[in-house]
Length: 435
Image (cartoon, rainbow, N blue to C red):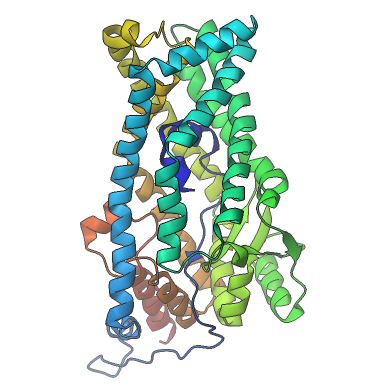
């Protein structure tokens, strides 16, 4: 969701950051129903050489394909920067022109109930930021995705999905913001700690309701009926202690050419789902490889670990907010019409300061997610036992993600292991199991 890169969505990310477990998200392309495993034998004693096999897989990708995927992914580095700066500009514009203060005044004139004032302000704020950030949203979410042939939606349906997302943000964000500002008013000294706790709480709630109430707003989920695929997936799940009764297919092809699968939900709302692009493009072995990875997230309790890890980061972020908000508002607050942290007119400043913090923490959050993805890769290899299928799926990542970045580049910008590292891991697994 590229709209998330504005200041408002940096605030909401503290509330809804982990709606679904991270999973494979791959670019689509021509139909592919089988693969040819690489059988490199480059060792002096005829043993399987994992490095040579990895390079052989990478050699399947043409120079033109590599250049295209590198351009797309490296362009994303700049979009992170421009998105941050764009959101910061929007926040500063709302403060410097006192637009935020005028929106608060309108809410105050409309009702005397503080919680309703917060909600009315939020609706105005969400609409204003959506309008101001719309040009960047269209470019990143529509124009650029079509340029690289990763999107299938025409502008009308795409705009409709954006409107749905705005409505969801208005409702869930409004409820969260009303609660958080109630804390700000009642705990003037410890608001940052209670605010962080509430943010984590709402993130957990969002994880639970998303598969049931939110995701069906954008796509249709139907049970997978093909028993030749459904059966192996469920057997793989049961063999690894996952109480799965069904597998769902999502009609993602109406929006994207990417192939994906995920395990979404929390506390009884979990759902194993794969998209229709995955079924159309991948062989059974490749599907098993992907689902083994997704099941790894479940078995390794990544959703719970993610709550703890991101919860700690959110607490640190609110501590930074406490330190920085007081200093900035003391200097410019009267000019902007902000009375203090409990004044809802200060929301653009909160969004700006949190965006600074989370932008600076990008390598940290990427590393947290990337570590879990690597763990799920290892689990998937041991569960599905399909190293060559894993390598083929990893090559699909190379259609929109740089396959072989530099070490520092991977740490800074990759929230998944690079294609090279994933294939190398699969080939090392294969080498050890050939003995």
